[in-house]
View (cartoon, helix red, strand yellow):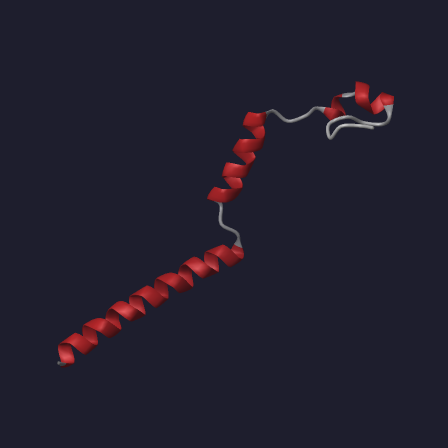
Length: 66
């Protein structure tokens, strides 16, 4: 039975292709992904801002009309 970082082919196991990333590299990659919004997240953020602005303007307009 092989572990998650072991390779069945002994030639590949000896080569540089099977270098396991360090914990720091894994976390750095994850943090970069979390910091960079993809298209859907960006769209959700923009629409959310528009909705907040529209709600604020609606409350202001209703307060002024009273």
